[in-house]
Image 1 (tube, rainbow, N blue to C red):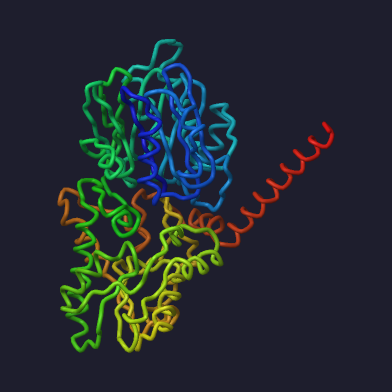
Image 2: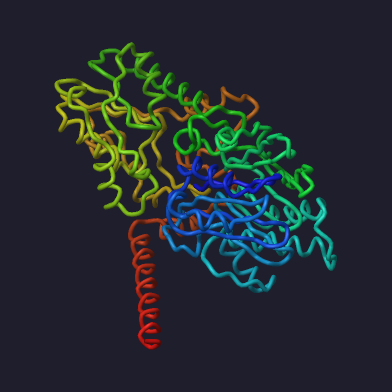
Amino acid sequence: MCGLVGLLGNERANQALYDSLTVLQHRGQDSAGIMTSDGNRVYLRKDNGLVRDVFHTRHMVQLQGTMGVGHVRYPTAGNDSRAEAQPFYVNSPFGIALAHNGNLTNADELRHDLFKQDLRQLNTSSDSEILLNVFAHELQAAVGESSLPAAPQDIFAAVGGVIRRCQGAYAVVAMIVGVGIVAFRDPCGIRPLVYGAKKSDAGTSYMVASESVALDVLGYQRARDIRPGEVMLIDIEGKVHHSICASRTNQAPCIFEYVYLARPDSILDDIPVYQTRIYMGERLGHRIKQEWPQRDIDVVIPVPDTSRTAALEMGKVLKLPYREGFIKNRYIGRTFIMPGQAMRKKSVRQKLNAIASEFTGKTVLLVDDSIVRGTTSQKIIELAREAGAKKVYFASAAPPVRYPNVYGIDMPSTMELIANNRTHEQICAEIGADKLIYQKLDDLITAVAQCNPNIKQFDTSCFDGKYITGDVTPEYLCMVDRKRNDTAKDQDQNQDQEKNELDLSEITDIQEKRA
């Protein structure tokens, strides 16, 4: 999960890019980056950390030009090296900066082909760098020996080549010096991408972003989503060109965006996220009402923040009071995307504190958006009991997460998923609940689909193991498990720390010699 933004206008782009990234911060807390261009040169600032920590006044002043791309990232394989912060850049042809949200499922094959056939050297393990070099190679082939700026048909041909070669999920925003902003999605449209425009006395500005909320807060009028397999070029003259470059498309957006990832005030693929969460709570409430007629629940309490909307609707359906039982420390990051089990456990305690009066002597129904590792659920139930709850029931607005996500969400390895190879009763015992209620998958799909009947299919692979691209093999899933388990992540972090210590040691040696 990452956040993207691209902008082309008539005024300096740096502040608008910065502001939009702060709105998309929930999509990645590992690193942030912005690259701008004045038509001749490019200017880059990226580093590990939150947006507010990466960019200071001295960096913003240096980001010149009226177009640019921005990115917030969290790593899907645990590597937090600043070398993998985006955007990535290649200087040929023309100069291309690229930001990517998603995951290429044939990255190893592409890495081999880029080196052996395309004669391109890669400097990181990021599949986003792979995607950039594939695009650059295809664009070079499309423009041939021409020294003129790339024409729209050249861009379309290059993206067509990317779609033929790259498998998996990718929402992409790229900046081509002297040409404009390019945006495209994979043929299934798994990860979101939307664009809009804003008119002023200086002319019309255009923005592309992962979520519509980034357009809203900057005063851009949402136009529409980039379609699956579609490329859009906003050229430096402010003209918009678009084409479907995939021979076959099958719109199937990731349903987990609506469960957890996206902000509730966003609209993705013409589906209001907030409304889907109302329907999730409504359907789960009716299921509890039907299957559990003799209920002894006193109060419905959400696990802040994502589950609030569903919990409120469940309270209405069940005719039970809704209460805020936990106060959240907003300066702690989202535990779902934190590296390392020890850090996740510690962060739950730091992030939430119970209001004892809402728990003492009561039978409470806690509602969360989903249960992935179970770490958060287990600790929250402990907090409720310590605050005096008589009984603790737990409801998940999503079905059991039994399979890894291979399309750009850092779900843990299969063995670290609490629902993997466990029965409903075993999961309930593991998290320490008196009763556990999951949403049914059919009800989840209906809750999202009824907001846009034109979408007939969603990627629900983390719930049912059916991977929409059709190329995910058991061998690939084994490789994903090896890379994503916490032991592998700890090793990556230790290697990065050792590298940093070596770099510091080398700097110290140089300084001592100079002295």
